[in-house]
Length: 277
Image (cartoon, rainbow, N blue to C red; front, top):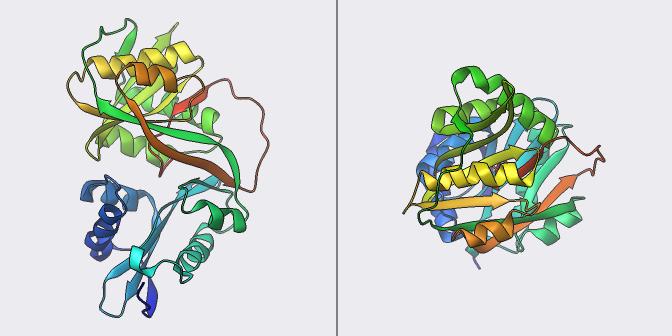
C-alpha cells in the first residue's frame, strides 16, 4: 500500500490512458474505445496523484431526470483501504444530484455501497465465450433508423428510465435486431464491439422465448466469434450456457433508494453492459 496525496479532477480525454491502465489492472476487458464511449455518455471524476497519475475513477451516466447509473468505479490496488473509494462515491453523488441511483456492485465494492445506502435488487450473471454454429431463427429483422423511437419506448418501459442517449449511441456503435408483429416492434436486441469481442445487449422482450430468439439470431450471425452477455437471468442464464457462453462472474444490481414499481409488460433480459445497465 502506498499513501499519496490525491486530488479529484473532472474526468476528461487526458485521463483515458490512465483509466485504461486501472481497468487492465482490475482485470476488466475494456478497450480505450469502450472508455471513450462511456465518457461520451457520462460525467466523471478522476483521482490523480502528485505525479499526475490516475489512481481512481468514477462515472455517472444520467438518464434524463429519471435515474442515473454509477459505474467505472476503480481504485488503484496500491491505494485501497485509504478512503479513496468513498471520496469518489461522494463526488459521484454530487454529479448525480437528486436522481435515483443504480449500479452493479462487484464483491469488493459491495460493503461500501451498502454503507452508502444502496440495496440489492437482483443478480447479474456474465456469460461469454466463442460461439459455434446454430440455425438462425425465423422472424428477426434488422432495425432501421425509423425504428429507434419505438426501441427507446420499449427500453423505457422495461427499465423505468429514459435512456434515449444510450440507445442512440448503441445504434451508431452497433446494430439492432427486432421482432415485429402486426407492424409493431415487440422486442429488440443490440450488438456492438466491446472488450474481447462483441456484447449482446440490451435485450428487451415480453417473453423468455422472444429473448432467446433474438440472442440466437445474434449468435447465428457470429459463428466462431467471442461474444458476451450480461444477463439479469429471468430464465436466460442456463440457456446461454447451453449455447457455449460460460458463466464467468457477474455482480449485484443495486439501487438507492429502492423504488417499488408495477411489473412491466416487457423485461430487460440482458444489459447493455454492467456499466450502463
